[in-house]
Length: 370
Image (tube, rainbow, N blue to C red; front, side, top):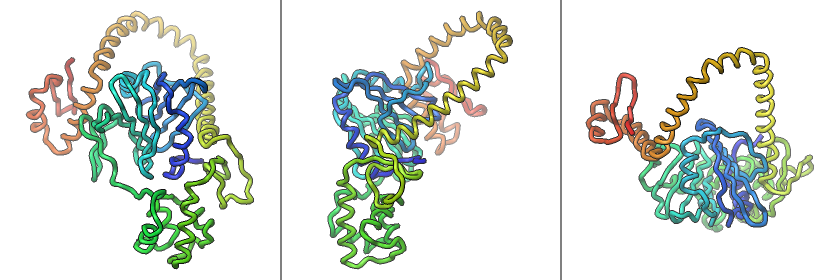
């Protein structure tokens, strides 16, 4: 089953996501932080409620299914609610031909851009008009760039914008490729991925084991590349592949068709997830019924303790929420500095920080006082 969107998939998905332009933010939901799954609920005059699921590191689509989410949302979700709540979508776009989805919001604080990196480990970053990072799901350190709070967002190294290349550029790419086969060059150098590279070969009548292309073949392939970006959306599933338009590769095979690319992804990914969650809930319910008497007894014993704990923890949670972004940036910076500094150097650097009460190197803890 499809586990990630290719750059070409995202190109066609963004065409469908234009329906979100003008929609107003209603609610944001997030699964536990380790799952990196979000549901954005919008409302637009006419269509009504519209929901966008983003499942990092590599999937996004409009959904009709709302799964169960934690009663208390994780910190980044709270941050998005605070900064984007009641905002309106101005633009939805793909960065070049990268697997980067950008959603531009008009908010009470001005224009904000939510950058969704749908590659590698995946990430979500909120920036202002100058691309200064206001908040992010997680800090990441790469060889070519560092993504961390309080800095200006840097894109990954520029990739080829395949949909905009001219014939001379294409000819140069093919002639200078380090790949041993033309199909590999289409997949890697053009960023098409394996499936669409094979589709390009099929359309241009080029064998998958072809090594070098002559001038006539280059012209033919170039014409077919342009057509890959001009297809009418006719989402379908054949085998384990879900694609936004008809492929010659699937000719003669049995296919299921859908009204939209998002719908095809939603039916096969969300329904499967919802079914698994329902089965899990049923099993848990049966187990609870077997142990109900023990549970009740323990709950009665714990009731008074929990009532006091709720009062205490509620205030702690409020404090953390009030200082969430400040704490997150501090801890992210400490984690990055720890890779280059000793504990003693770290203590000296942060000695005057008003938030830090103690740095305990023996336990690897940073105690924050609010």
